[in-house]
Image 1: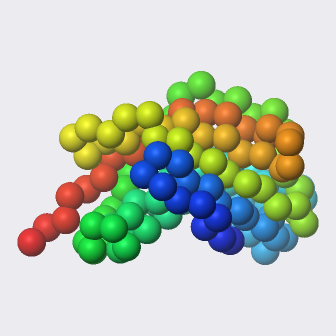
Image 2 (image 1 turned 90 degrees about the vertical axis):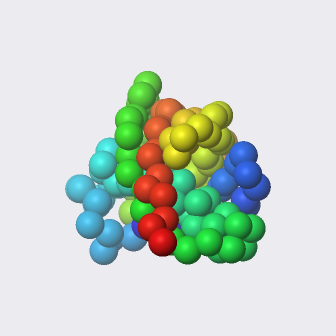
Length: 124
């Protein structure tokens, strides 16, 4: 659901996604609201996956969307456009991550929201 991981640190993760016609979230030539939310969730997953593999040397963990708050969709991207998704972690506690997220094309903000992700701990 994302094309490239562009930037990573423990607070901010940035991805780029090429909106392609073959994507299952395309509706009438535009990326659907569900696709936008999934793109944000996949950016969160890329953050967790990158940190686990390269920093913590851990295996894959499964994450679940716990909540979406204050979702504002100003514009939906069209097929052929590239979106940039930024997730900024606000708080992490007890396997829950609260983050703010923004999807943009250039300097245009398409989506803003807060997302809560629950991470299932690895089983031994």
